Length: 336
Picture (cartoon, rainbow, N blue to C red):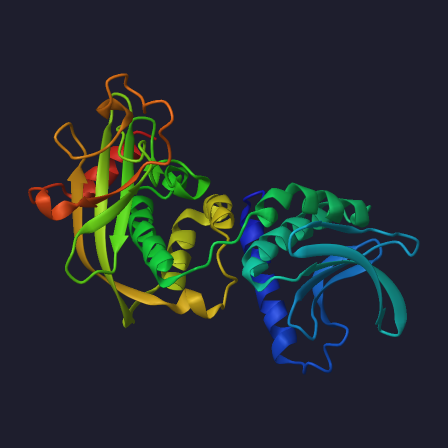
């Protein structure tokens, strides 16, 4: 997986820029079989190249020895083959890594940046290294894609608003954002947690709770439910703008979490989706807060045979909360 260095961030931006330059500077006919540009990374066999083919699939081409034969088709949507291209009139053999699924373009950028960084550090033995890095990313590539619906984008927007607040409190606190890794709550420290719920409804304050542990307080700690109401608004802040702000604040520490989300590639129209936050309410999840948790049951655990607990929670039945968001965030950050 990604090494999370500052050079990784620069490599990702460079790769996205080069792929866009290839796409903008060529026709579909010129991209058959693949149009390429040189990347400023050298190996013992020549320069790396980025490419785009007639179907607009992205390629990373890594020079290998003339007798090398590298192949890997075990990753969903990403394949590794060997290809010979004419470069400056010379037949050059490449390990050709290609992304066949557009929904994986963002993850593919991270994979390619990882390869570029390792090749830069050691320009020899490039063919096997490409295969090894691909294997390390295989789990992320193989997961079933979850479409980026407007509802899911709104949910991400709410999380990013809280993440920005956390990072402005302490730029080193990126590790508190645990939601992308499948934890019950979106933000965690050893003793405190924040669960973000976002709605696009114009009136109701009904949220969906996923699992009996989502509103379970950490031992000897606290849990806050941060409710956000957002509205799609062309004059609001875009997903891409929030992502850039958070990345500027945290640096490469956010890369692993962003890779887990399998975001669209930079420049994708989805990232231009803009929202305005019209309401925030931050609720302390205490003993009086209505929630279904393991402690709700006599044995302190879900009854045998019961699983996948989901339910709706109408926040309009609760008193108006008085928590200050900055105080909640400070409590979380101070515990890291």
